[in-house]
Length: 106
Image (cartoon, rainbow, N blue to C red):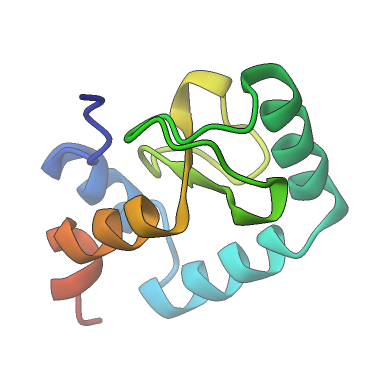
């Protein structure tokens, strides 16, 4: 199984480098709507195929999420190894299991 959770250190780096958690989330949402992100997503899917890299389920392109394994970088500078393709179920599980997203309040 692939380990895809950010470490506590990576989580702290993410928070320390951001003006505020809310502002960072807004920037992230804008980035995910950008042509740059769409290009990164399409390139990754073309290279890796239409399969979830956690459960290995075959998916349609629109069913795949490109998930950040960590957030210790500026958006748009992700390396391929920082990203993983996940089906909807695995992506939801990832966010439910990630303490970082569930417990931060700033």
